[in-house]
Image 1: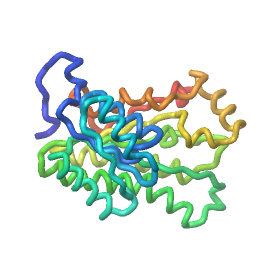
Image 2 (image 1 turned 135 degrees about the vertical axis):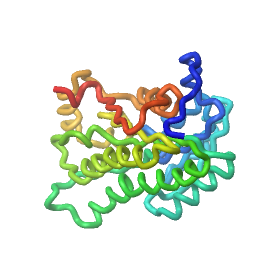
Image 3 (image 1 turned 180 degrees about the horizontal axis):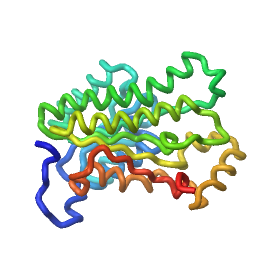
Length: 263
């Protein structure tokens, strides 16, 4: 059914994910870990998909125990279509279904555009754009058969502006492509799932902590909020997108950046 209409219920109940099954790529670190926690806190059973995080299984056990839900870690590779499809099929089999997929895995690099090697450029695209598509595509086949589902992409404010002083044309292009991909899929798949994306600004993750201090000082001067965002501050937006509270929203991009893109 096109954008199936939920019953009109108490607004707090509309945000509940009790009885839902969610899977999150890049779900064992940074933004993805907080998204996994947030979905579990809202009542969802969660499949935490990771590529290299050593303590992914213990993190999944911690989330399960803290929220009285099922949470299991699955190692996979989003850049290989067959591998991530196999993982997502296994998750649907293990959990009995799949309601929500969060395509969150991402990487970045910083090179002058004229110096990128084909391999360096391709690496960014393979994870951020190709991998996100393969993840959503695999989930969509399950959603189409079920007749319902929900796709959430993690994009970036880098999709709508040019960051300075760092040089990251490949990353920005990959995220801009992801936003347009979400729009296209939201129309193509409207009969059986919703598709939205969230574009964070500067988030205090391990990725950002590795950047030069002078970069971070410059960024702070460009953010009206005068601080970076903690990853947990994003989880409410993902719960909103995943829940019946956003039942008529598809093809949307939610920007969460402390005002960074506004001046």
